[in-house]
Image: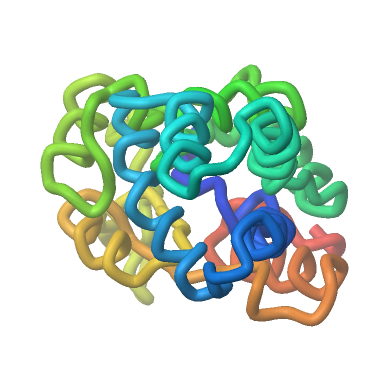
Length: 227
């Protein structure tokens, strides 16, 4: 069995917080898009570690900016939850991998609210789910990857065996891990063969899915149509 580890955001689904930022800008005209981004960057670690919920964070934001909770909270929350979007073309790839017997693990910095969303919109019921909000550690910390290794030691039983050119010997290759952040890939190198991929690098979902499929074919996780 082949084993494959994937990040979620901008790897198997699209993340678009621009509507959230735009609303914050309207909500307080003195708040630029860049400042709204900083607000999100500050609250994200708390959400990822389940130290807070989006409801609590929005309460704090409304209070800080002296804005009505009743007027703005619901709209901001919906924009936050809707920032994660499924990509049907990549869902097809996930389903193909699962049907081919690939064991998939999802390694994600994600809060409780977004974790609920992705479990509803992605075909991941049969995937291992190592979510920061449930394990108490975030990428790129060493603790995050160590905890995955401790929780799922069987993942490394599935090394792909690569044979030498004369076919007389083989050597184990670590399972593949795909992420859209270089710092996470660097931190994961002791555990995985790592590969960068981001939906955001491509002009449309068809092209992004094609490139992801090409990457998986190259690493022998999918069979070519001719095979």
